Length: 186
Image 1: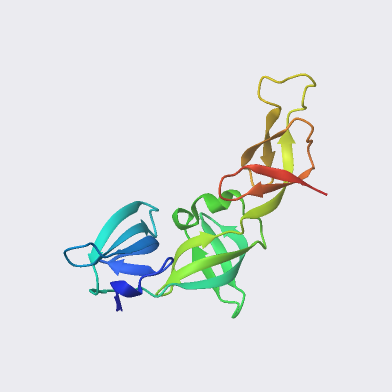
Image 2: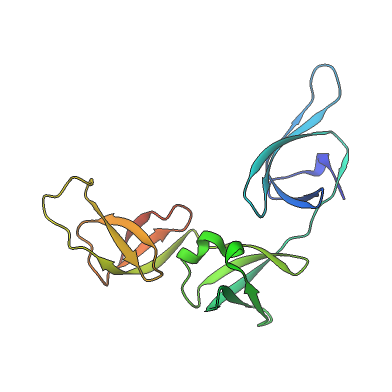
């Protein structure tokens, strides 16, 4: 239990059995009337954001979310298998929890897995990863109909837009939040 006066960004609240992360909060004390706390909350599982207002000083339930450093080992059927880096315990995580992170994970990738009561909630990747281009069409000199970019498939099977001069086998840096090409890696 915490007071609404103790809210801070990143705190996970348990509201009506649902887990919500505080994205923004603002303590408001109007000229007349009681103070209140205006918050923007993000649902941990679905990612939906809502605005919620609490009276100042009321108690809210907080949830303990344990963020652990883990290593992605392999895919077992539909599940992804992660190993806790501290105690070598293995976790099977479903594809709905991994989500879009699967597009950027290679075996042995270091990630952060958030757990609540031993159940995985979501997978956090580093902001960028290095992937190798496995397929791309040759870039035609003078082809500027697509602003100098072409489609390329990286080793995870994900497709990104890259500059025309890149070829198969080139290692590129990719932003895991947007899937954008960031640069070539030597």
